[in-house]
Length: 278
Image (cartoon, rainbow, N blue to C red; front, top):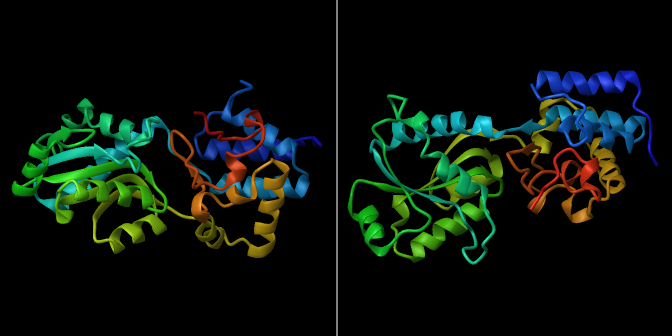
């Protein structure tokens, strides 16, 4: 059943988009129009809840990636006190041929922007998909590190699997660094618990943390409404709260599956704001 968007609700959407500097246009495929269509599937109370979720949403576009990468590289350099690094994308399953966002981050390290920055211009970066035995020996025996990179870390499981792959190939554990543009607290804790060095540009709060921050009055009712919204949008129960109940409320250039399902997992991709495309 479709509902109308009254002028007050429409103006609330526009205000959220303007505050977040998200583009508002009438292209039917745009984020703005997708969001409007999502809200038309909901009743007045559900619309208010979804707008609260939208207000919590973070959206990192490709134009944000370079600045985030510069930030995290400077953090790493300041602490590590060396300037030679081997970079490899975080790939948890090397038998899977799907293109991963970590490959994009790895490629961005070729950008001239790093050579225009006096703090980063002296870095010696060797970009690799994998390491030969010779390079593994160089990492272990010289003043250098292997840096595993990605744009987002949710639970940390993919990063840890990727690190274990290189450990099994002979890289010393203490020579591995994990680096991400954005991380969640759960992933950060899991990576540190495994004893890896970890650097990130910024941290994204989970839904539970954002509910506390936004001072939502009744947590249980708010969550129940999210479940009702998710069902209306055709989201499977297992995806309500994202991968392993991560409760992420963000999108990178592609929304991670850690994000709550109401934003990306609806039955019709045209009726959800951040659909995942293959």
